[in-house]
Image (cartoon, rainbow, N blue to C red; front, top):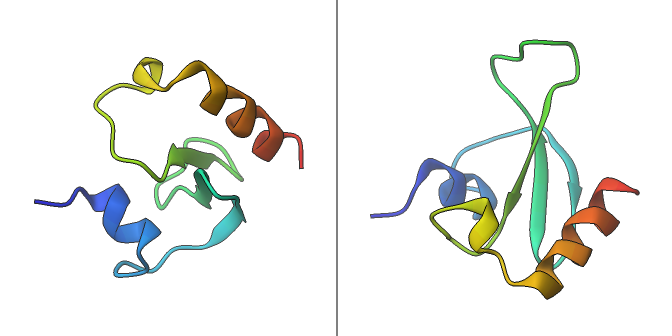
Length: 66
């Protein structure tokens, strides 16, 4: 069963997209704790962020620096 995040990436659930690259997707939180709170998620389904391969970390930081 797909997670809510994979459904957002596929466009099944609407969101306000902030940024996107081949590996990651960034969008605004629907219930932010602070104005502009943005979630950045990998497009590949993984259980824990720290399970990302080392090479993917570079893609995460390149998206955050755009």
